[in-house]
Length: 147
Image 1 (spheres, rainbow, N blue to C red):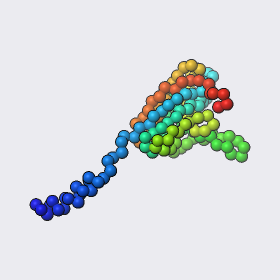
Image 2: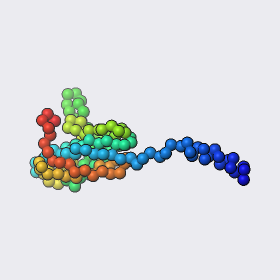
Image 3: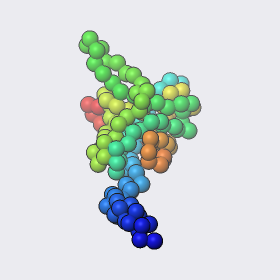
Image 4: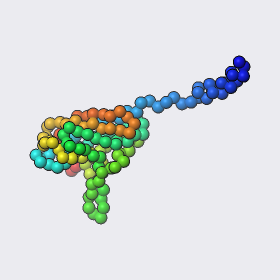
């Protein structure tokens, strides 16, 4: 009996000193909006600010407004602005607001099912590596001047 207690005591001590597991990862999405499009447009840009409670990654986006959606970035190469898909998604450092905005990282709705009209709205479902998916309502509005 004493021998068992002596063997278990170090394990109990280790368990008491172990850090508690991290809280459930969560991502807060704010100010989601998409640019308006004309009927027949092949793509639409959408933007949102994301803040995660833990290090995470935005890995996918879906919307009923488009056949498919992707996470993109913009870069300047040889004086030409180029847009490309972020195959591995977008890093979200813990506690840091990450703004998806015109001219930088953004969401692309590809093959919209209809026009996105100013003043209307659409849903965006954001999928993360760790946090539960978040569905936001994106307002359809023109970009602020200069964006």
